[in-house]
Amino acid sequence: MSFLPDLNSPVLRSTLRTTNAWMHLLSPVLRLRLLVRRSEIWLVAIASMIGVAAGLAQAAISSAAHGLQQLLFGLSGDERLSAVSGSLGELALFVPLVGGAILVPIAWLVKRNGRRLVDPIEANALHGGHLSFYDSLIITLQTVVSNGFGASVGLEAAYAQMGGAFGSKLSAFLHARRSDMRLLLGCGAGAAIAAAFQAPLAGAFYAFELVIGTYSIAALAPVMAASIAATFVSGWLTDYHGNQLGALPQIDVNTFAALMGLAVVTALFSVALMLLVSETEKLFTRLRIPALVRPLVGGAVLAIAVAFTPFVLSSGHGALQAVLEEPPASLWLLVFMIGAKMVASAVSLGSGFRGGLFFASLFVGALIGLAYFHVLEIVAPGMVADGRVAAFAGMTGLAAAVVGGPLTMVFLTLEDTGSLSLAITMLAVAAVSSVLIRQFFGYSFATWRFHQRGETIRSAHDIGLIRSLTVGRMMRRDIRTARSGITVRTFQRDFPLGASKQVVVVDDAGAYVGMALMPEIYALDAEMLDRPLDEFLALKDAALTPEMSARQAAQLFEDRSSDALAVVTDRSSNQVLGMLSESYLLRRYAEELDKVRMDMSGVDRRPPGRR
Image (cartoon, rainbow, N blue to C red; front, side, top):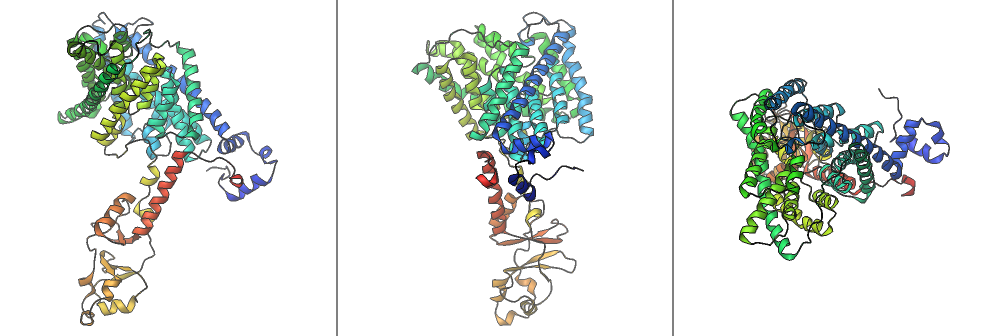
């Protein structure tokens, strides 16, 4: 039970507006809650605190995963697992298998508790920004174990999860509005990505494109403040230096045209990569391998990679840096590396290792770009002056399609290379790749996973309110019903013309029989008045159920061309619960859409009396 006053109470609001000394009467916590609700400056301050927490979390997660790799694979302090050049030793073959074994009891505990772990995108789309801190710790643990034991997955899932969890937890403590809670969750997730790449602009647009679902002026300052704070904190703790690639050539017309073709290639590969992951999961199902032991099988497969292709292990950050500094000279080697990394990532994710495809898509995209450059050198020598330009274009095109954040990738390129002309070209590459994906596939990797699970989430737009708008919430319960078996004459006597447009007819057990439409009943000829009413009922096989969404109900109204429909418990028992009209449904649906649009466009924080 909460002893805090209701901050939405009209009486309290009136009192606070009419007295100048009210702030001194409140506790510091209540004072902070009210300040955050009323002032954008305080919201920015809270977002900065979330950014600091996200930066600390990112540094801790990265250090933990890399520390595990150093311990288990015998790496030196600066050595990256995917960039190892020599042999890892015989004992290293068993490391992924042990990692899979560790994930089994964690997955069993999650399944036993009946929990379905939610990520920041789903939390913002369906749950109004509420993200469980406990569940986020579980996801982070799974991701660190997966990456630390060599699975071909990235840590970005853990980064965004913990950053978002800090944002959600703090906004819940402050009793923030639904829109502010979604915003602060996005601040935390974006700040963590900014910290990982030391790229505050990329992190901010990761928040806008993937977590919040839209860009608005009201959200700009909090998101940027969180990203900058996280970048400073993580950079101070981890001493990140980024890529040291030297100057890149300017982009001319020929290069630009060639990179547009590469954008199409990366769009095709992005679909192949996402389908490969889902088909791998289906393969485990067809082989009847229990979900709890799949990480063991995946770990055994990854042992092969440890022995022969260590560059596919972990997120691929070290291998990416290596191929950008010294690109492989053989086209066939690049083709092999592309296939091996895609298969390793699919096996890792499909077998139950936890992680993301952001880092993996960067590595695979760079390899695709370099392979594309080799092909161009055969068919049109000199069309692209530097293979690294093609590598960046491949990274941008593939990651923009897989991750679903084209501007995120453009700003990442700009902040990583400092080349404005390259960033402008990458904007075109990302646009082409994203348009093709949206037109012919329709999903990013995150939303594709939701689709595989039966969800209809296409982005982080807040559809939770609309989805919660069910028939059961909107129907009228105070309805008059007529008994089945009476005559038309009796019905006309009991229900005069003008009393209602339609009447629900039920049997003696209260089950739905049909709908008596008043204009049609009163239009019957006199010789039909003594015939049973049941002969003239409409919509006998059309009724709504309480769990139907507003969209499903609207579709049924359109299919049946009816102004109102009965609501029944279920189609087997048919017990009548109430009735819903199409006009009321559409009005309520429009109201919820307006709320979502207002949430997307920002919130007016001025006191009500000053608006």
